[in-house]
Figure (cartoon, rainbow, N blue to C red):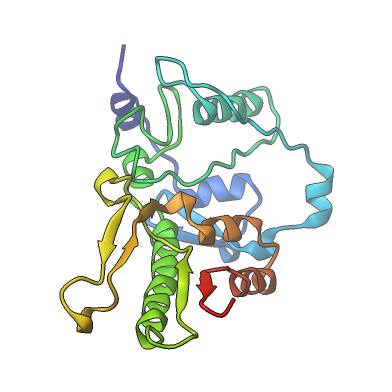
Length: 229
């Protein structure tokens, strides 16, 4: 039985432009990341065509001992539909670095039901997760500065609801204390790190309907409570 990585490396990949053309995506709508990965402009979304299509949602599957779960089933289903002549594409959540690095079955499917190039997908992909992590932690840095500047005023925070995020599920960082080393390094605070997919920024990005809605939702994030709440 071949391993996932053996199957992946034996497969001859098609250029991303060829894949895009099969889906009627023009070169102007495609933003390539190397030879085999690319992003599609959100302007490509057509509500009328979406209304004419069918969506099959695969969710809440308990993985088997062989590692077969939602991702593998979704990929296999899309491959099967295309095999019988249907026009189908699979939409998967970008894998996190936490459970992957080629371990625990990988994060791009498995066996002959996997998305390639596996190594690139497992290691940062197009950088979107990094952008989410950076945006979330920038808010954290601004929040810490607010706490520091208002530590002796009634506008200071009595409770903080916001943690940092990291795209690795590091148990040792789930709960920690920041701001040690003197007053110049901030206010000592009990905090911790969540994994990036659990970030509120990630949830907002998934739920936002457009850029204006994205901004509105970010503006409404609750970071903590002031002493005068």
